[in-house]
Amino acid sequence: MQFAQRLEKIPPYLFAEINQKRDKLIAQGIDVINLGVGDPDKPTLAHILQAMHEAINDGSTHNYPPYQGIDEFRETTAKWMERRFGVKDLDPIAEIISAIGSKESIHNTFLAFVEPGDYTLIPDPGYPVYRTSTIFAGGHPYVMPLKPENNFLPDTERIPEEVAQKAKLLWINYPNNPTGAVADLDFFERLVAFCRNYDILLCHDHAYSEIAYDGYKPPSVLQIPGAKDIALEFHSLSKSYNMTGWRVGFVVGNSMGIKGLSQVKTNVDSGVFKAIQKAAIAAFSTTEEQLQSLVSNYQNRRDVIIKGLQSLGWSIKPPKATLYVWVPVPQGYTSAEFTSLLLDKCAIIVPPGNGYGSQGEGFFRIALTIPEARMKQAIQRMRDAGIRYGE
Ligand SMILES: Cc1ncc(COP(=O)(O)O)c(C=O)c1O
Image 1 (cartoon, protein in one colour):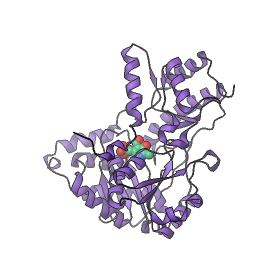
Image 2 (tube, protein in one colour):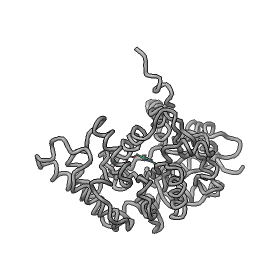
Image 3 (tube, helix red, strand yellow):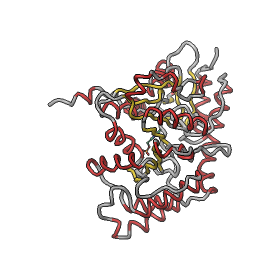
Image 4 (cartoon, helix red, strand yellow):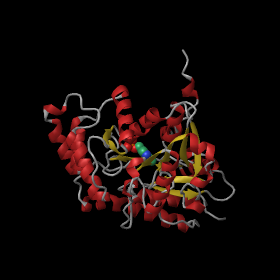
């Protein structure tokens, strides 16, 4: 028996290796502090659980769901887009589709639009799925470096003409995993113009749209007039409402994009469990107060980590959004060397920046998904091990 060649081209899943190391240390009885995983540590909000209990007791939710989502889910989604971003007049049938978490829909977009030999334009560092799904579809990933000096935004002027001509998809993700960077409407406007010029489907992965701090509200690319002609936006309820295990999200925007996704979906997977869609409808009515209580928990952790790193010599600004702090490694270390040092000397797990692409070299990522007390402990372990930035 032999794996298909495409599997051999896929780099090992970053967290598979990290989890292996973690399990080994835990088996040795070592108290490991895992600052690695972007999975919320708190339960799903109570009103969503309540809606789920009711929906699951209703036998009409138990059969096959419609592929694209139940009408009520798509209509509520359209209303949420208007309330949250001021994006009006979305057609719930032609311009919205439900997704089994945004990862499913991200992958399916590559299957729907990328031919063997086509280019995709993907951020580096970036969410690894953009690269692997390009490979699954037989395309060539062309990386757009995200550099600190450009505030971790890609520079489309550096994309060679022949690559732009052959590109089918351009992926962006703001608030950004792993850098924590954010983007404004001017940036979105420039990208919409670029993609329109080259007839590229602009794909905005908005997985962290609600996880933002200090009163900041991340915008939608669909706020740009005419963006619907060329753009899809990928939303997820995973991080917004502590629902990573539920697998629910949606895609909104260009009707041809939605049609392509719908065609892949009807052939490779199924709709979202109807009871989960009903619970998601309840999630869309989460009040600002409820959301702020979830977000302020991360904000406090962010402040603990930033203060702790600053006390160890790092000069680092607090990110405005996401569950992540993107941290430069001290001089003289590669990302892999420094993260190994953290593991060996402090039993702290963090992913090395180059796990998100070669441009991530020189960084590591901290996730804000463990309690403040554990974060303080992690900083103390670093202090005790003599780890400092800039010395
Ligand atoms: C940038 C980004 N996009 C998409 C996802 C996938 O989220 P989900 O499939 O849970 O919606 C993640 C998860 O970590 C992510 O970081």
